Amino acid sequence: MPSDLKDLENKIREARHGKELDAEELSRIRKAQNAKMAMQAGYEFVASVMLSAILGYFIDQWLGTAPLFLISLFLLGTAAGFLSIFRVSKNLGMAVGYSQLHKCEKDANKAPNDNNTNSNERTEE
Image 1 (spheres, rainbow, N blue to C red):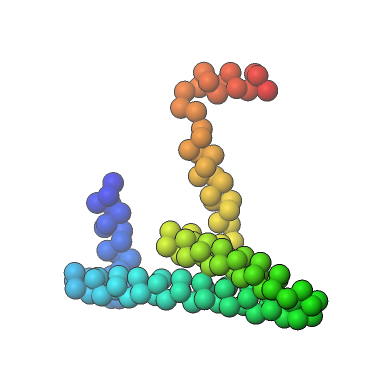
Image 2: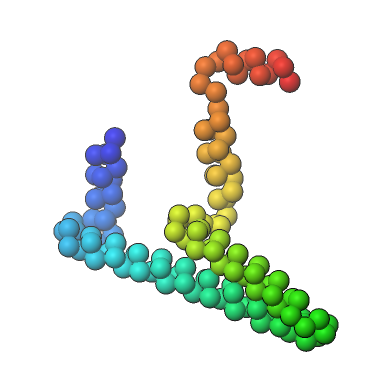
């Protein structure tokens, strides 16, 4: 099975680039993809922290609640930044249909293996 996947991957590369890529070219492409992911994670982290802190500052100025919203939104933005880093590092997207796919995978992992337990669960409900 893995050899079939490698063959398919090679055919896709050939179709995209018009030729078979050597090991050096593949290494260069992977490094570029890794650098792109690292930059994306960094930008998303900084943006979420900065925007939430700025929003907290202006809400505090508007309501006169000194550091309350600044601190709380800063912490919330930091948590959101770490979540985005986790999502990028695990290659988890928030694209359309992702949650449904994730739910199907979880359901498939929880499915019982033999039919007897499955029929028993149905009768107990």
